[in-house]
Every structure is written in C-alpha cells, then in structure tokens.
Length: 175
Image (spheres, rainbow, N blue to C red):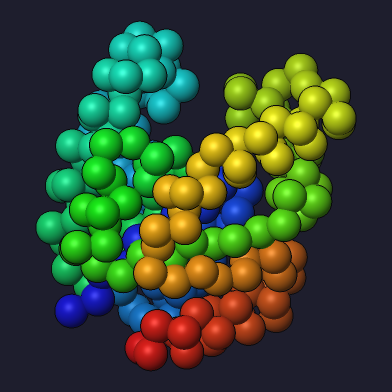
C-alpha cells in the first residue's frame, strides 16, 4: 500500500511533482486544497474569509484525516498544513512524508509570476515578496523538517526535469 504526503511551501512543486509521480505509479493524486474546495463548494480563499484561519485549519485537519484513509494515493498538502495541530505527526504515522525543499530564490521566481492566483501575495513588491518567502520558510522549517524525507524540488521547469525528479523521488522512497 502506498500513501505519500508531499509537503512544502507554496510554489515548491507539490502539485506538479505529485501529479507526475502519481501518473508514474498509476495511482490517484489528491491535492488537499482542491479536495476541500470540492467537498465544500467554495474556494480556499472564501473559506478563509468566512471562517477565519483557526476554523479553516480545523476543517483542513478533518479533511487531512479523511484523505489519509485512502490507499495507494499521493496527497499534496497545503503549504501550511504541516504547521498546525499534530498534522505532521499524523501524516508520518499514516504514510511517507516528503518535504519538497526549494531555495527561496527559486520560490521567488516561481511565485513572482503567480501573484494574481495567490491573494496573499498580491500587491507585494519584489523585495516584499522575497522577505515574505524567507520569513515564512524560517517559521515553517521546524514543521517541514519533521518529514521523513527531504527532496530538492528546485528542478521542475521542464518535462525532462520533472521526469528526472519523479525517478529520483521513486529511488528515494524505494518504490
């Protein structure tokens, strides 16, 4: 039985690598944020606004526990998921956890072009975005560091790099 949780900051490549890895293993891929949106018929942004962060994080934990019961699956978590409650410990108990580690400069480059899709980043200057990323990574490092595996996901820019990363991840997890 395969159950893999991909964690990491926004822009780390959890969805990109997760989808490609799931295709390689011929198993389903679940993005936890998408799962929540489908279940509640609202965007993550709407849920955050309506419920506030504390209530959203409780909902996220409930949905994490739900998808953690699925078998033969790759699950991409939200960037903050490992940082609340006992979520990281729970994922470690229920599957293999992989922290997609990406240098802040690479995250900046990836997120700079996606600021319109990510409300939390809108309106930030380049310098503000760099500082935002670095500070968030520092706060989250203790949580991300609890993952069983650390994987350099800095090379996901082309199909070749994604395919190479899938093979490296497969080797790392001995699958």
